[in-house]
Image (cartoon, rainbow, N blue to C red; front, top):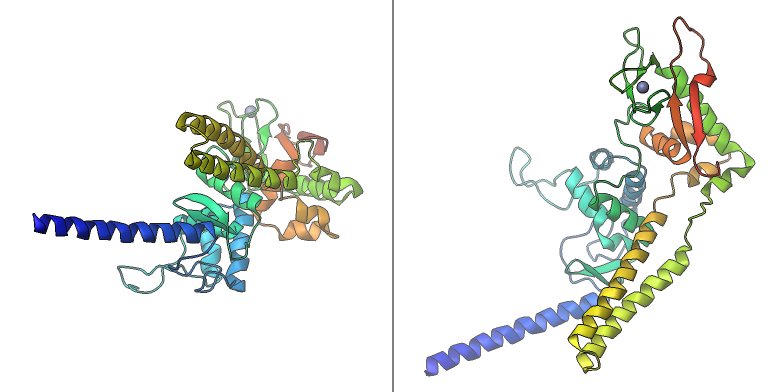
Length: 349
Ligand SMILES: [Zn+2]
């Protein structure tokens, strides 16, 4: 019996100790502090001091993701710049050396609330972190929304080697345009992706024309209006509301602990606040996605900026601005006719 008692005391002490550790961890999280662990990419070992070269890569990674660049490409870009993950290879010829970036490790970085200056605990954001953010909360939320839901997408789908494949539509049937179908080998072509195949035509003159029209549109004095969206949200108001709602959740928990709310009242009130918070966070994510046009609209030399963009980014810009429809060119037509390319501006355009 004594042995049983001693065993119980020992177990009790173990539980007390782990309860204390849990409380300490929760307290650290609520204060936005870090409790140690592997060095986070973009920061020094203290988790707080920014490591500039990596921070630049992180910011570029969010930017690329939101413009439709695939995770695997972002991984290749980081590897090419000489960045490595904090993990080591555990087998093979290079065992023990740092692993290169891959799509899944890039995904883990971009989903991490730390880069928006948020401290998470058990998968929930619980506080503003003690370390500096590298991106805005909207940018991070937009990235998370994109990575969590396969039906959402930033840039247009399809391979990013061609400007308009899977992006433009057939002017006859509305099917997505595909690459290929050019008359001569070595010449890129576009064709109607529908089963009937309404046209096949050379890609290069179309790409050149569409690029010129986009540059022209973005060079006009009123180009900044393209950024003004009727549904554009007041991001400061959303941030303020999100903070207030999170405080409301905390207050509800306190009221319940005090006994001034019953469990069922707590459940109802929490569900209501959480639904509203989900809505606010969703609108913040939407607001984080609009930035593909910003750098172009602000540029003095739009053509130079356009030429410097990756194919994925150019496709994202076209997708944001217009719907492109390609029409059949007719037999024996040699010269490019602009009227065979329909450009419908989205929004006020
Ligand atoms: Zn068609």
